[in-house]
Length: 127
Image 1: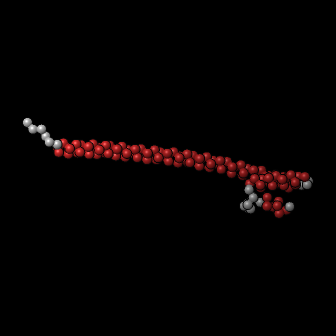
Image 2: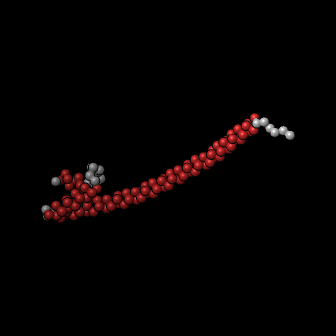
Image 3: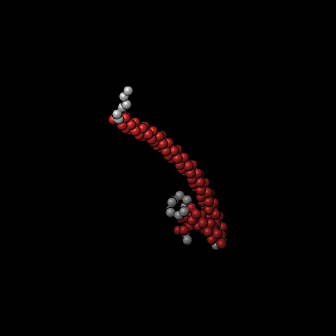
């Protein structure tokens, strides 16, 4: 049990234990020491558990703040994307309007040209 106690009480190393597992282990260690009649070790484990809980709480708070910042950034990027898509749609419709007008004018010119050519080929009434 001594290697486990040393591993749990060592704050400086990153031994792969999650904060939740470390905190649970320290709490269990303090209870085991208390039941074994070693109050000094139980108190040391309990204080280590309190420090671990404070670090865990601080990390969770920072993680929530970072998540809020990321969510804000994501919403900003979505808004920019929607604005760009709206501009693209506006540009496409602005390009389509002159093109439609041009096609109508071309159709009128074609009809007008064919009318002129038909009229030119008709015999004209003379006085």
